[in-house]
Image (cartoon, rainbow, N blue to C red; front, side, top):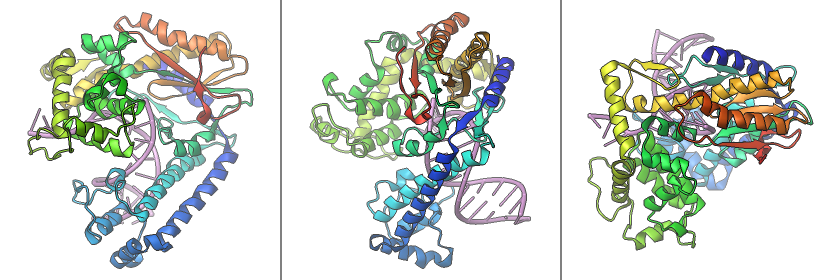
Length: 456
DNA sequence: CAACAAAGCGCG
DNA sequence: AAAGCGCGCTTTGTTG
């Protein structure tokens, strides 16, 4: 599969992604201006003066407003703001999490500037550096670099193009356009494939039911438990938080203390409410949970705190709800210790120095990607067989990116959908759950940003 | 100047 | 006992 995959991905490299170079140049200029403007405000506006003066006092001509190490010293040493601890080497933590609750205009501007600088240098700058004279990008796909036997992409990396922050996405994604004014950027995405594949390994009956029975909803149920909600009180946002701040972290080996913290912070940051409009802080207070509680691992959780509550949620999660999954992890790890390796269902052997979490996470991270890779190979064969003009232009772990030629959308999406949901399952009988695919398509000649849900 | 480590941040 | 997994890329700051 990797031999065929290498050939297929080299074709994807050759195809390349069309770049809107005019937009790129324009947006770089615009961002440079915005970044300079922000930097100016940090130095000269009245509301920022106190912080900037303190900074100058400490660093003089060495003042660098892009240095997070300097920022940490200024805020947490000089201005006595309460920090969020230090890194391993003893410097103040100064990432987004440590800064975003500080109510200073200077810090708000700093965070905004850092965000724009990231967009400017990593993304727009990276694209500009790599785009060829025809306006095409040809990123490099690797199958030999990743410990889990996933893929990686470089020069530039097109597997981490911004999407979650809608503003940054709206700056970067318009760069990626169809190669023809009548063509369409199209993306097929396996939904929840890592969870599905993990179900194939651990065969936890509860997890399999969640996957197979569409009337059930794991993330909704965990939102109910985490925030003590009734079914009719769960909002989309609460479900989102349960999914991304509890379920996935727990599946990958996180623990209740850090989950409790991020779920709790999310209430204010995302202004979480019940469906009826009551703030979740207030809601929890009515249920007897009045504060977060200590995040110190050595302090025993106190009843009436959110930390204590999450401890019980975690216990039920692993000991009652997903007990079979829990036991599978124990068995898989012990088998690895005994043999020194494990084999994935897709035919890969992982050995060497692995810790417990890596050992129980690698098999489905790799296997999930192999599902996508197998489909990519097949889709490309079909495109060639039917002499279609649609081309594959990328792959993002569980999704397939294409530039669909005029008049081929219906055929292409049918082919891709069938391969991903039907043929794949026939090829690998270990896939004992349904595979589901979301398809998104951009209007003719428009960019990757503008993809929207497509229904046959 | 190059090489490297650390910290940070984007994605699945 | 430790306290999410996997990547690539950038800037800062140090070292030789």
